[in-house]
Length: 165
Picture 1 (cartoon, rainbow, N blue to C red):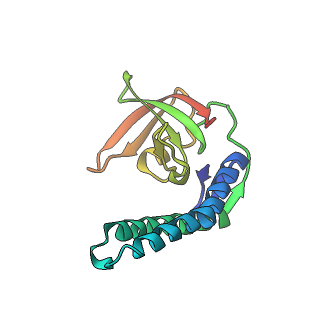
Picture 2: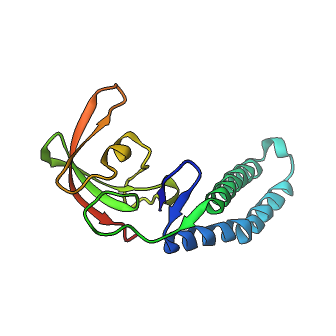
């Protein structure tokens, strides 16, 4: 999954299907489940001191926020192919970099939208300083990006492969 402009998100068919399934679950069965939790907690009595009620309402709020995020993402999504395995860094690729020419100090990350991030691998947006710095570079090339303190950092692209997750 990749973001190429502010409003368009490119997704592989697999990513689109996964996010669509999550939206359908959250919009249907999950809403029913949370409504039942809230109803059960209401029956326990005084709502001002009802921890179960407040927890269920907070869970409902988080769930509805995710529904809105997914709805907006999928409305603006374009389904396309995964990036080519040609050694050029592009959104949807797992990238391995070395910091400041030290090939022992490496970082592996997915260049893509945080909406499709998983706990398996760290994800950097193509719009982030590091993401923008490495995007379009080839394996073996150096890239620069701006640190929060305004200084430039250099990295070397060691590997760039399509994400298979």
